[in-house]
Image (tube, rainbow, N blue to C red; front, side, top):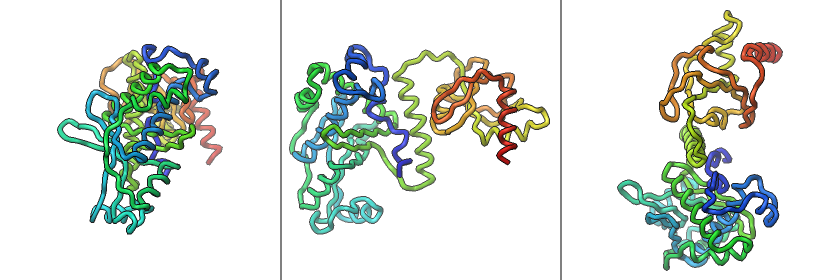
Length: 346
């Protein structure tokens, strides 16, 4: 099941390249006051994750609707499923923990509601941990969930400030609004969101559609990966230098070595994608050989190449387990070493 959640934007990634106008604190300041984190972005996301847990708990406890702090009308609210729809979804695996009789054949789940180009849209919010157990127990106790009134981000500033008292309330509000706005822009772009925290409030939340169909899941897996990397790239705002990259996986290496065995070295590549973002080549594959096209082009995020020769590219190095390793070796030496390793494995 873990593959279903891969390549969703984490709360830390939502704070990639956060502007100074949001907060001027540095990583060492956060480490000194709140302990070590994997990155500066993870430090900035701590108030957001904590607040998100507070929001979900308050929605369930007080039956309220949360107005997401973005310019358009966006809410986190309940969706009620009854009748035949409830029975069908239960048969397909949803609501399996809900008692038929106690719930009166009614299921509830949280949704992220926003306006599309022409109509209202929503994405399910999958929850786990203690908050899920509480939600299920309330449903099985016969509680009915409906919206009583709306709440906003201002209702949580004081609680978050009690947890992160070294930050001012103004800084906290800026950080929270920044996180929600980036989350919303990512959802509009087609990304999924994964928020996990264990700071006194056990919040596990995933915003996005899931499927258990293998073929559809594999397609969504690749789409999520590309959208996530492109969204992060937009936040980093690197100046595009006009050069595209291609990647050569070991399986492609095997076929091209066989095709070019009479030339002693690979001289031509067939049927490859050239990508604007280098990370797209190796974010999913464990091992990739990276090349850069010598000639500048401007063709969007990626384009298809039917045929290209080695003289038209520059070998940069290898990427292993999502980490790029620049190489000082020539491509001729790399391919000879690869052929030697392949013959030993055989």
